[in-house]
Image (tube, rainbow, N blue to C red; front, side, top):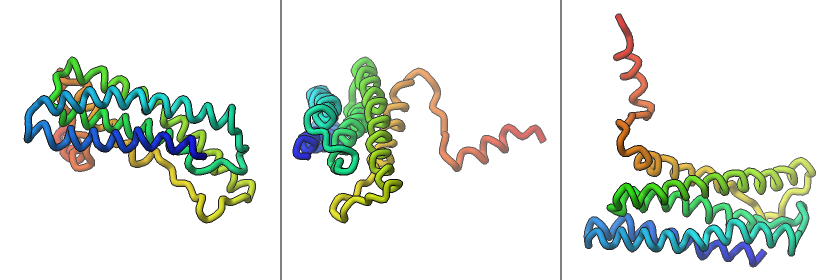
Length: 184
């Protein structure tokens, strides 16, 4: 179980990188955006190691079985989804050129592709416990990490298509689009 806590290093580092990208480039200059970019790539190695290595350690070396899988097993998934969201923040607020943003966006989507299936897989282990009527003890209640990190898709998508026109996909835009398409 302590192995999974190593993913917290990447999660905290991502938070620091996001704060650098959100606050410093607009106040102290564009060099801070480049620093956030470089730190994001360093953190990417940490998150990749966590999301690949920790589940390997759990399945091959520790193998607790489905009845005693701790909720901390979700931490590598959270690390992957957090760094993906952090990539969107660095691209949006880091004052980077599009040539620097595209690799970050691609890698961010790759982390979403790694993190979401792992979240579903580990979530199904906890869901199986409910069907087996072996509820986790009170201190081991697990929450699913995929919902808050869906925000990674919005900022990254905006920068992935700099040459295409922006589309307003909000709920308030649909009635206007329907009225403007009405021939009558």
